[in-house]
Amino acid sequence: MSLSSTAANLVTLAAEGGEHGGNHQSLNAYLTGGGALFALLLLLWITTRFNRDR
Image (cartoon, rainbow, N blue to C red; front, top):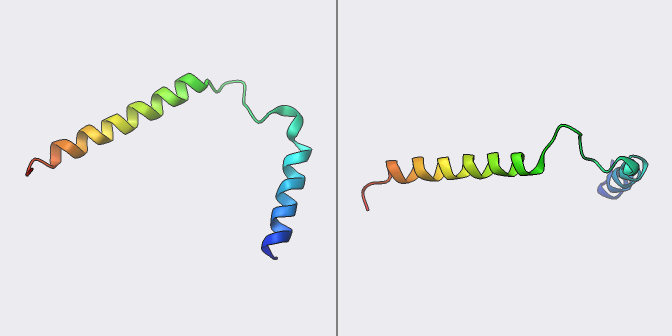
């Protein structure tokens, strides 16, 4: 399977399911973004705690 035929299949698949918008009813964008921000800030805080040699 070539890259162009794969891309054409994905475009066709996306066009068929386009009427739903792709959003699930239970997903809240603010909650998802806030959770991701919290996780990244937590990882940043952990990284800076372990890098005390500077």
